[in-house]
Amino acid sequence: MRYRRDRSAGVIVFRRTDSGCRFLLILSRLTKRPLWEFPKGGVDADETPLEAALRELEEETGLGGAEIRLVDGYEAREEYRFTIGSGPDRMLVRKEVTYYLAEALTDVVRLSTEEARSHAWLELGEAQRRLRYAARKRILEGAARAAGCLPAAEEAGSDEAQSDSASRRRQARSPSGRARA
Image (cartoon, rainbow, N blue to C red; front, side, top):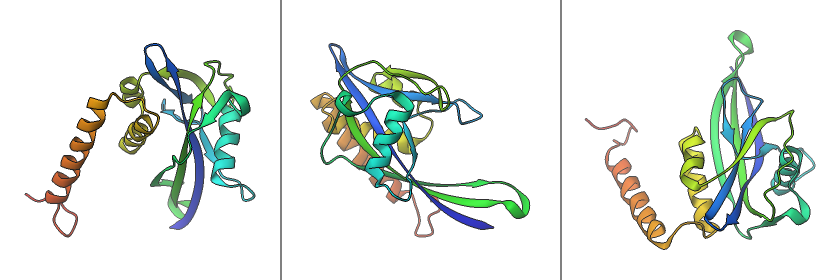
């Protein structure tokens, strides 16, 4: 099997409203099954992940320049693997995605119809429900915390829950990585 490494970058976009923060998700046109995700795309050889993330955000949503404000110091990474093709053409792809966080200063989105079917500004809970992958749900929660979009009680409870959950996962795994009976 052949092997390839890909790099992508994206932006988690939020805006503040009278009723709390809303997060931008787009419904991808590039997948067979419906997939809600953050605006993101490939990093070109001549650009940094941040440059790629901002380019992709503007290409996919029209948001850029004076319409957004980056949250300094926020960066999250996700790595995953998938296969493409079949038989002798089958390839394992290892993908690394770097996410940045930005506040939108407008709710106007000019969606790229080539890459997205739709978009939505969603409360944190609904955005997490629409995201398919657990890693992205966790990344979104961390972004919400960094943006100051979680009530103080939720932040404290979330930290404790994450710590307890991580501890349970470590205890439930044997050194081989298999779940203990």
